[in-house]
Length: 224
Ligand code: E4P
Image 1 (tube, rainbow, N blue to C red):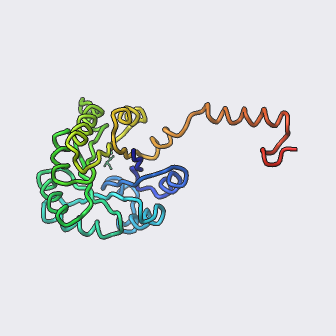
Image 2: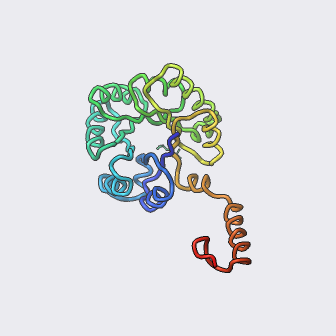
Image 3: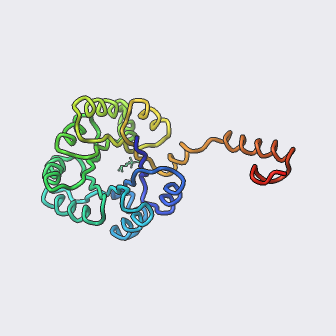
């Protein structure tokens, strides 16, 4: 299962990429705007941290088919392993179909139903990104939508991965792991929440205390 970072903050990316096995970075126009940096420079900065083999996903702003295709080609050429995020509007689905013919890597985004995810996979999207928390916020069941979509993709052997997006807590991520989601993209705070438990640090402190009570300060390499 892939773990992707849903942030454009290079300090967070560097920290988490250094400590964990991270399979990619996703951005969207809101995430990029938050950083207040030139788009192309930000992508290059992220690239310099994760290296050229790790996918970066960035989204088009255009909404008309022809403009989406043109913008997608620009984004796609920014680096190797660049995935272009296309919202699954009517024009977006057409753009996905066209861009796949041209060999562009696509992440279909802003997915709220399993039907939309199916149509994006059918159009050739490499990733399909349902929005878990945004679905929950409209009294839907994000985990259930993603679960249905995973089932459809796996049953019919589509060449797409479900990358669940839009998380507000670590429990949503765990619920999706249990239904076999292929990939999740999580903001840095949720990634850190997945990593941490106060009793882990407490246990480490206790181990050191017990050790030093007998052997004094130091580690296994220099005990007397
Ligand atoms: C993926 O990159 C999505 O754009 C993102 O996860 C949306 O998250 P939000 O609903 O927290 O804005």
